[in-house]
Length: 245
Image (cartoon, rainbow, N blue to C red; front, side, top):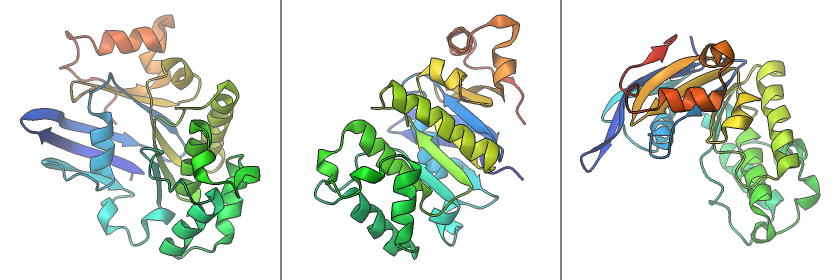
């Protein structure tokens, strides 16, 4: 059983087909890059998986179950879709403790995950004074509270400086390769993705165009950037390519 399964998910908004029968899988112990041009349907797909949007067809599963049916979602799935749902008047530590209380987790987890994402010294500062990069790290800390086996991250490198991006790369690899977590990362920073991921899922105009290993998509010395442009061009976007797993 795959850690994440997207099965024939479709979603339209006001007549616009945002996602069109997309299917792919994410395995435990891997970092999977979820790629596509702006408006390709990446965030809509993730929101369907997390139960934030009801798909018109198909389903998204985590460890074989829908997100809504998970008894304690925070212990199975850590997700960051945006770093804007943070109360500016609370400290980072208090923000995390509120999440712990809601999920029935010990408050000590707040300090543990602050240290894990490298902002322990900022735990007592108000979130309103955090930089964008610090907000991203705090949101990531929230996703880690339940020590989940699945991480779903939408543009996690936004706001990070080069040092922060290097840290994120090491962090994601550690989660997948050493802890066995299934990591799904949506990103548009192709050069960084190429240095981080094991597998790649590419969609364009709401449809799957490729799923496979990074090596498969960048075969014959092609860069991920060039492969991405080739696969998402108008002539190829309607025809899925690669291993459908």
